Length: 103
Image (tube, rainbow, N blue to C red; front, side, top):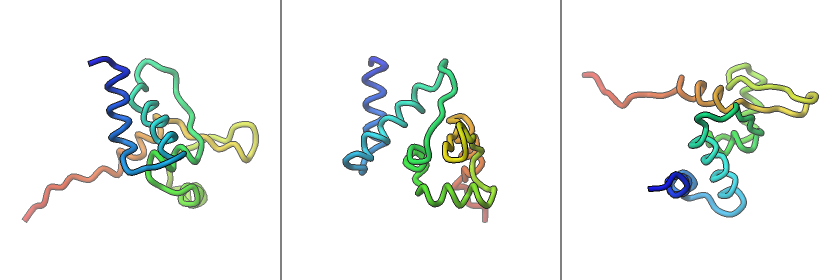
């Protein structure tokens, strides 16, 4: 199976249930995540991060204010908030939970 076809199939599963303009954004971000190997670090905007993590922009802003969210960069002034893709994946990995139940 070709890499392009695999990416499309994975993107379709990733963006399942998302419609319209947001669907295109989720597919774009998913393609970035899938193809992150051997590429320079990618910076994402708040809206892209929200779609990727399933969080609202307001929630990301609250996390920044409280100092408990993923690390971010201020580029070109106060308004240009960007998140490194690698930092997002590391942050999300800290919250992984196993379903093991111990009696």
